[in-house]
Image (cartoon, rainbow, N blue to C red; front, top):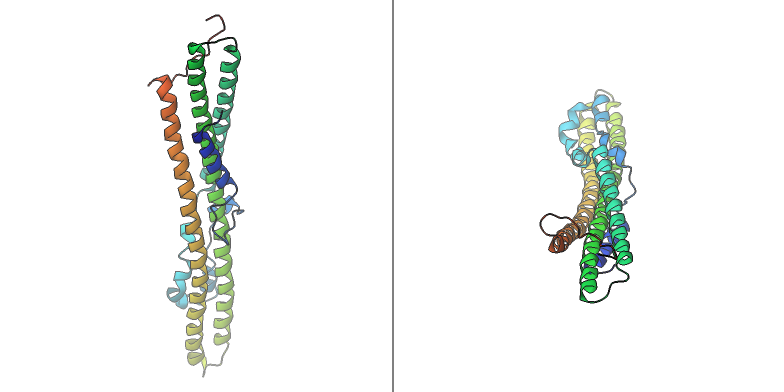
Length: 251
């Protein structure tokens, strides 16, 4: 049961599962559960009594809401598509085997025609099943990639927060006579630290975006294949979508 359609779906699914869509530097091993628990490390600065600098550095946390998601929805979608893919692929194999077995003694144009029809139906169903498996892997892989990026972005912000707190605490510890000047310098240093960290975050987000675009292209290929598989099946089943029955040898 081979065809250009099924070969293409298999190759696209392999590309999704082996992570070839991931740009260099992107990890696809993140814990999807983390997407439902996004916290902003910048809150530690306000809690330490330095809320007055927050308007100046809040941009550092702007990426975090973009990385939040519903891990249960992602997992459920992936599992449902994966189960569907396995079921449809199994049905396609069983149908192909039954059609071959039950018509083993047939000969002539009728036998050839039926074998062609049943083979096309089985191929179409197999393509649908494999495409569902590929889409399941895309949901899982994409979610894991976002989760990895979230962990990296959070780590960068957390490190910057630690540096900023040290800078501000040192300035606050200065005597009353020099507090104003030292704090002014500390604020400049604080903003510069946030800008540097934001540049790192932007790089991480850019890597994720590039990877997402690659993955989206593979998903589109699967969606196109699904349309072709449906057309292939309905070409022989009609609008009802009922597969041609497997005849018995005495039919």
